[in-house]
Amino acid sequence: MDQAATDLRKTEDQRPGPGRTKPVLELRNLVTQLPGEDGPLTIVNDVSLKVLAGETLSVVGESGSGKTMTFLSAIGLVPKPGRVVAGEVLLDGADLLKLTPDEMRETRGTGISMVFQDPLTGLNPVFTIGEQIAEVLRAHGSVSRTEARETAIGLLERVHIPDPGRRVDDYPHQLSGGMRQRVLIAMAIALEPRVLIADEPTTALDVTVQAQVLELLAELRQDFGMAMVLITHDLGLVARHADRVAVMYGGRVVEYGSAEAVFEHTAHPYTVSLFESVPSLDAETSDDLRTIEGQPPDPASLPAGCAFEPRCFFGQGREECKTILPKRATASMADHRTACHFYAELDTKRSCA
Ligand SMILES: Nc1ncnc2c1ncn2[C@@H]1O[C@H](COP(=O)(O)OP(=O)(O)OP(=O)(O)O)[C@@H](O)[C@H]1O
Ligand SMILES: [Mg+2]
Image (cartoon, rainbow, N blue to C red):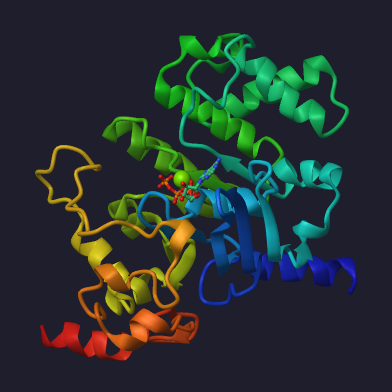
């Protein structure tokens, strides 16, 4: 394909609207295991999902459902001796799991980068923020000290840190939590990645600062044409920011689809329960969820059937749910998938309620 055609294809892929169907990042049947006392624990269990160019995929699910581990697997950072044992992680069609550790390091930053929940652990207290951003730039190419500093200042400006020329010499403790999160975002976008994964980027922040950080992420996504993965517990954020949603339970994606499909035609009882657990407006904090009764599954003793069955308002006690693992099925529309034996009845039940 000649250069003009390649450029054209790129533009089409990054264009907003129904034409954008090519995934930038695609996980196919990903399986990740960690060692357990009685043998390996499967923490990420046959996960398949797509992140399309210019879109935000939100990944939701209770604590321990495998959200973070899925994306650590995708970027080659599963804590040792855990490892990805099967599947593919395709970035623009190329499988990252086939890369050497050096190639993978190179791809983190330029291809795919991740911002973590806690802005303090992501920064080193003994270096200035300018030095830390410069380190990212220098690790991926030969830039002079002066160039790196200039670029760092530009990046701080890009993430709306006031007075960047002065702030570049600050140490992390001299900045507020919100500002530190912005610095981490600046580091993550320094090499203009194709995909930015933001893992609970705002939970440590107060509500106003949370909103500002998310606005910033949305703005950067737009400006750079990045695809974004937003891992969050906050379904309000999902409703506002997601184009697509993946719902995880017990290491599996149990429902996946466009935000419209998942919100309007919810096709898994777990998703229904999650939506019902959204706090009311007068709840004190976003953690103040009405929790779903019962416990999430223990990765050391996953059942043969559906892992949600013991807590499911719909399938609890049903033989099929207890004994047979539900296959992924197409729900309300193409690309809306659910892993529930009875999703068809579920929709009927909800519309009758
Ligand atoms: N370093 C680790 N060693 C052993 N088990 C781990 C480790 N990290 C995570 N796990 C286990 O892996 C499973 C998935 O964890 P993960 O952190 O991916 O969940 P999560 O969905 O991101 O949860 P949260 O919403 O709390 O961030 C959990 O059962 C957790 O206990
Ligand atoms: Mg997590």
